[in-house]
Image (cartoon, rainbow, N blue to C red; front, top):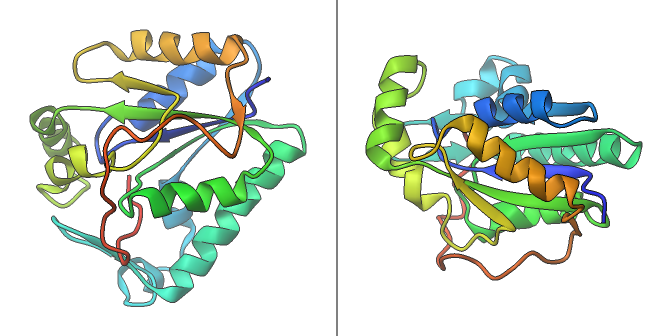
Length: 203
């Protein structure tokens, strides 16, 4: 089935956004790239640090009810673009474990989705985090493993041990083979165990 949406999940500073941009250059058809940062940057300032919005520290990302509503609307908006014919790669951080993936499954129902786990060793992610300087120190190391617990993938890549171009080529090969499956089921989870229910998503 022709892949309509690529979902990249990985921790902060794992290289998801760079991978998405590389895929845009590599894939023959035009693909739109979106990140959870797209949503966070679109929020009014009061929701970027308030209890009803989203707040981050080293160990957790907490979200309020208003953010949850907007997050759901955003995911369904991404899905609507895919149903209208756009091909989309979106990167996110599944800090809520399987519940985070299920939110996307619900939004993308009926679409052919390729689920990709973007791995990176904690020390490598921490070094990237320090270099970028726009995330709480320590967040990348905490998220590096946690975001993959209980998540099912069609494909995994490691941007810490392989160049981004090679990782993108692996993903593109799956896309070109038409390996995306209608939402309802990639393979079994790599690991089990969900994160706390109040944790949100942060790139």
